Amino acid sequence: MPMGFRGRIPRPAASQTTRSSRISSQQCWGWRKPLQHMPVQRRKLATRPINAYIGKVTKEMAANVEQLLKLGVTKVLVNNLHPVGCTPSQTRTNNYTTCDIFENLGASIHNNNLKQVMTTKKNVHIVDLYTTFINIVDHVPGKGSELSKQFKRKLSLCCESLDSKGYCGQQGVLSTELLYAVCDKSNKFFYWDYMHPTHAGWEAVMKQLEKPLREFLDQD
Image 1 (cartoon, rainbow, N blue to C red):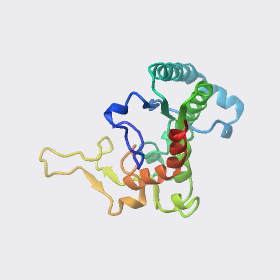
Image 2: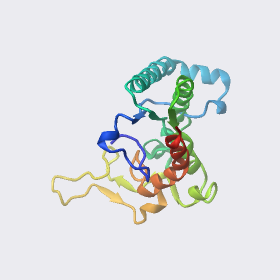
Image 3: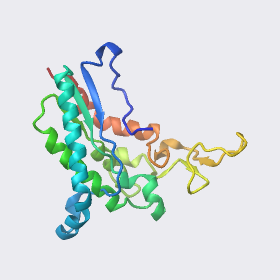
Image 4: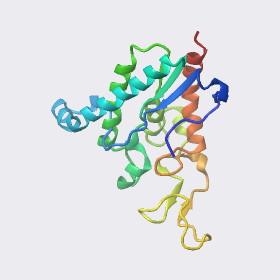
């Protein structure tokens, strides 16, 4: 299931798909976190192996956006990467207590690069998943914004497999044998499973994204 957003912004009808579009930047690799939190030398060594790959990814994304614009699409939304180091798949190793700094490094590099290649393009808006997620999950319990405070479990998951290599929804040989456990109050969890937010989590994200999205889509 690809990462995207859910909310109140209505999807365009089939006849409108040539006028607006959204490109997902959900690429998967292993490091991510804001660069300014790392010493310069360590940052250079850590980022060297992935810089070239990220450059190819964002260059291809820019080319795809340009192609859409030439085809007549009037508005293009491009989402950046969310802080993958804060997902339960990564926080599990530290008992769901802190985000993984290296897992977030790659997302930060990717997002900075993406911003650079999209800056000169008109009618293109970057959907900032990284900031909206961080505003919620990167706070200790009881701290942060009101959106953040509503979640008692920000880095753990509601639906957890009983097997370390399993997944939410997994069943045994018999369909009645459930190999996962679900929390009682999913609205208190930001993440549903190892990667995806709960419905309440997406609502909190969309509360931050809805205004800038509508402003962009309403521009002439």
